[in-house]
Image (cartoon, rainbow, N blue to C red; front, side, top):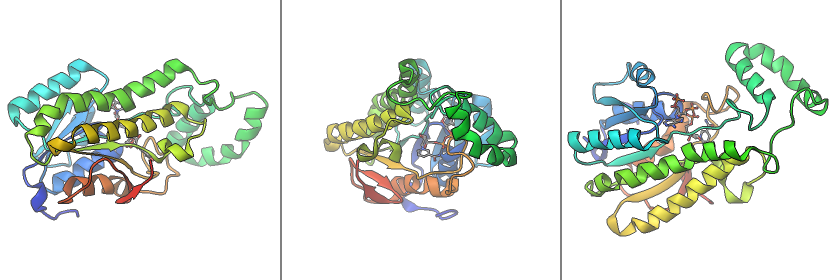
Length: 278
Ligand SMILES: NC(=O)c1ccc[n+]([C@@H]2O[C@H](COP(=O)([O-])OP(=O)(O)OC[C@H]3O[C@@H](n4cnc5c(N)ncnc54)[C@H](OP(=O)(O)O)[C@@H]3O)[C@@H](O)[C@H]2O)c1
């Protein structure tokens, strides 16, 4: 859809949370090309501005940490005074702490550094992982039975309460759109029929986000605001890692489709533009 001016998207205003890199940045890029006024939310304003350099003047970069009431309120006040309306909220920001914490052990952190700095060496060390684990040199994967609940709460704060906070805050402006839409960036890891104990915090956060999607889609049905969740697939980003098969443009596709398609349902879960099971 790149480069085409879509009638349905002309002058519409969208917020993309976590817009400074990965799938969020790609969604911003594609919606910018389609003529949306894009508000790119970034925890670190400097990083957001740097990321938005190749994008057009219609992209406005704003500081946004979805875990903080004050940050969300500041964004609300800006959008309210600047536009008085919001057409689309894309709750994309998310964390999967296998990269940055102990949810799945030291090995994951080592792997992450390897992926970044020495991709070749990582592939050589990878086969030794089971041996390192059974020998106790690196801890076994944390699962639901032993994960730190403090860490689980941190993940929930970003991936679940963050979108909830954003939705509560922006409903008044979405109501003014007449075609308000909310897209929650979920994951197949949260699908109920495939839940397992690995990455327990992340899985729980995405299952919960799906439940929130259903809850709000029903609550907002009468108002006309459509609320859907989607899985981008396994995408090559900082989170997805270098082995992921999909490019960010593929990961962003369903979100852009949900943003621009003339008629969309509400209360559904999508992957590759198709409805999937919760
Ligand atoms: N990549 C995949 O394979 C995959 C698969 C399924 C679902 N997803 C979902 O897709 C979404 C985007 O993932 P990605 O792969 O693009 O990840 P990513 O490259 O790690 O980017 C995550 C983005 O979220 C932002 N973020 C994190 N915490 C935040 C907070 N408290 N407030 C605001 N922004 C915050 C990050 O900002 P900083 O730069 O400040 O950290 C970054 O911009 C996530 O919800 C993820 O769960 C990804």
